Image 1 (cartoon, rainbow, N blue to C red):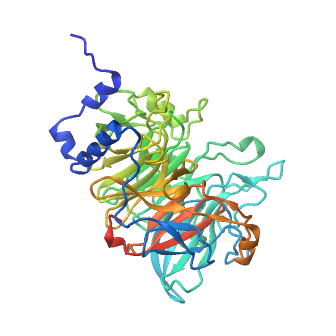
Image 2: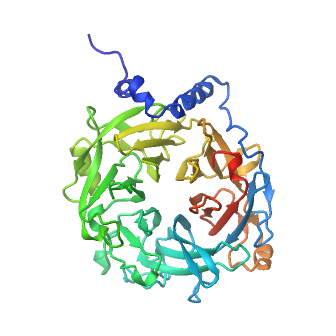
Image 3: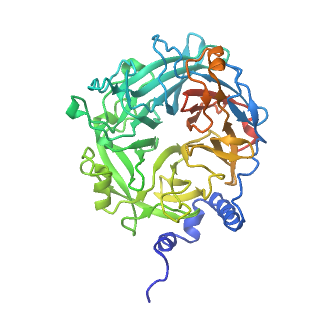
Length: 494
């Protein structure tokens, strides 16, 4: 008899059962209960009142401006704004995006947290003046590749000055990336621009950035593939690098197996094997509108030509992956490693009001790297619940935190983008809210070289914790601000 299941139902039934659900229980079980309540509510239920309490505007310890809304007991300091002066006398570039803590060093002033930060800049009148420059082309219109990285040295004594220095230049649209177990940052270009016809180079690669800028090579890791990279994470057990692709509804999920697994700087630059994920028993699976609890067994197919040129809107690696039955996500964005799992955000997974798949509010997958099972642990069906989350981090205590990038949402705290946490039982709550509104006079009084305006609809990005879990660092991409947040973390999941 022919099955009456819909294609999506067939996919969901593929791995359902006590064994499959046990992998993520009780996390998934609780989230399924939450999803059921959402489905039966007359209107979508907002995130719960979080374990840290209600939000209220809090003054920045550096400028006195009320830039964030936070729960009681939490404070913050802004630093390294776009336009501030770096250690070389040049201005800090803008469009702060992905970021990670690569280590703690002992500087002249004591212990310093070392962060490496992406700048999602495309063509610009100037490039980041780093020791390592990838593409030195100057185009006919006066534009140069303006993306790259800066390194920030943040002292544990919050009253001390923060130092920012350039660390990689000549790249394009450095969106996110990921830290390595050996203390470097992998910076990802979210573009497949080809400047060879103008005397430049191809773009769409991953670069390794070291804490000491003069040791960064500026060489692309071509074997990791040329596509619109979003983020990466490294399994410290195997050295395998997992990668997301941000190309709407034609996005693969990849891993890179390095030839040199010594876990040291430059090892990845020696090459390796690129593979794409495929759902076992379901060739060509379209994972565009998952529901909480959906689970699949992954297997991997080789990508013979990682540097292949794109075909239309599809990257070269994705074309090869699809030919081999590889899966498709909507827009793979943030990914973060924690205790054997990779937490992956698909920022536009779900359905819109017209039922179109891959046009939704986003979801979170949990990939068990030992078993290669992938499970949907959170899915938003309304922007009040989660508004297109993008970057993701996991605290040292195991709490998941999502950075929204949906253009702002109106909730009980007003309008703006948010940081969304997931409780230990899996329910979403609002941890922080973008409250960035100031005028030119206020900016000048604070010593900042940015235009006044209402920036509440601008995305959060680059969330990450220091190794002790004391500081949460996060960026407001526009106007370009980095924050350090601290407070009574143990009251909740973070």
